[in-house]
Image (cartoon, rainbow, N blue to C red; front, side):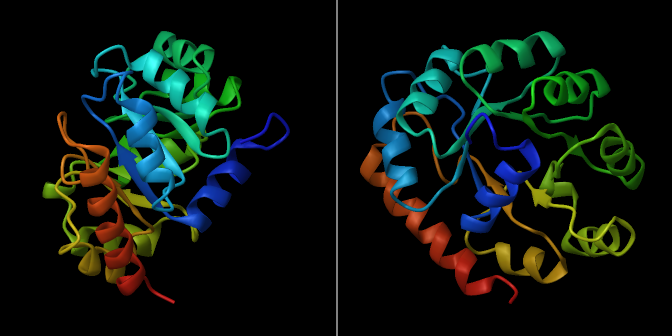
Length: 216
């Protein structure tokens, strides 16, 4: 994402490349370069480091510096102050487990992509009215494909719906058929202690499964 690229355009570009968000909870700054290289080399275009990871801002800064064409940012962002910290570290993406209007407003003020977490139609419409660029459906374990289908029927056409929580290569197909746009991938993709080689192998498996099941 370059300074002249709008957040909406940056998200659209990344989603066109691969609408899968790598969630690197527990990543350390020392691991960031190798893990980032494994993911970018597997076609991932969106990476988030949750703020409850060790020294997350250092990891975000390292990733943003090494992979400037990748949409890098933070997850588990809970307040406006954290949004400012992520921006200062070079992040351009804000992902939250919930919808907090102050977080969305601060992200928009800093020209950042913002994907709040929602679980109900009320939350979804409120987040979109606040300016969210897309919606993280969380936790996906309690949001069935049938729920995704119902949301897709009433939400504005084209809104990105990203189930997060418990997503594996084996359960993506039913969500995609129901109208999911893509997914956030957590511990099934990365967990502390996994080597870059392991992460790359898993990443490629996710990509293959997604591409094989994506609607045309």
